Amino acid sequence: MRNFATTLFAVIISTLIIGPVAAEEPVVIRFSHVVSPDSPKGKAALRFAELAAERTGGKVRVDVFPNSRLYGDKDEMAALLAGHVEMLAPSLSKFRVLRISDFEVFDLPFVFSDLAAVHRVTQGEIGKEMLTKLDKTGAIGLAFWDNGFKQMSSNRPLRNVEDLAGLKVRIQPSLVLDASISALGARPHPLEFSEVYSSLKAGVVEATEGPVSNFYTQNLHRAQKYLTLSDHGYLGYAVIANRNFWNGLPSETRAALESAMRDASVYANQIALEGNAAALEAVKASGHTQVIELTSDQSAAWRTAARKIYSDGKSVGGIEPELVARILKAAE
Ligand code: LMR
Image: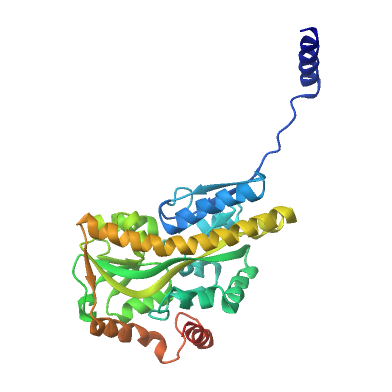
């Protein structure tokens, strides 16, 4: 008893004199994105957070902010460069604001017949080269993540290319998307992702395009009567970090985060495939939106109309024809 009292007394005195042993504060990474936590990107960001904590032994904590809660399409890049957040995963259609137009090559319609074709580009030499384009900005490119192929929704059934005539379609802010939607006879209208649901409801736009996982997790099936499985393009992401922050991390921590990113990327691409399939089933089961499958003739007509923007070998959206040719070859 006496010993215990003596020890307790010693602890109290030492705490008063030197203070409690300070626990090391983790480095915090704020990872902001615009989609639902239940979407493929939302889930992959959370997986990265888990792996980052695990592999750094708790030295890094990743706080994920979904649904444009912290920053939206308009201001997230500026926030990253200013160091208000440390990580983002914007769609490849949203990099022109950093003066990188080449990423819009992924917006070209009907280039990739499946995700394996996408991966030959994103996981290969071209992908590596493309991420280094970010070196001239305050960002650093860490990985490509899939969402998937885009479908077209509307309040009128879209089967033949003529059905799209004059339709006001929400697009992401990409010149290649602008050209593609125009080539289909519709009227492209760029809008922030967070505004899509309300803009469809208010009639600001009549239609939108995107992977089914985004369609379902944003409740767009409650705003659109028809969903045409057009597979007319691809939507994927570049995961990026603030360059100074990333390069300023102790090398051991950075290596642990790179390993976490590698595994999170494998997971991201797996969950994207599964998430889009599950979302399609959920849309069908909801009974709100009728899903339309195109006949092979209808699909071929969409393809011919949309591919006009690059099949003549001219520059589109400022992208050099050489890059388009390389992508087409790799995707073959
Ligand atoms: C969109 O704006 O439609 C997409 O970029 C949203 C996303 O991040 O998947």
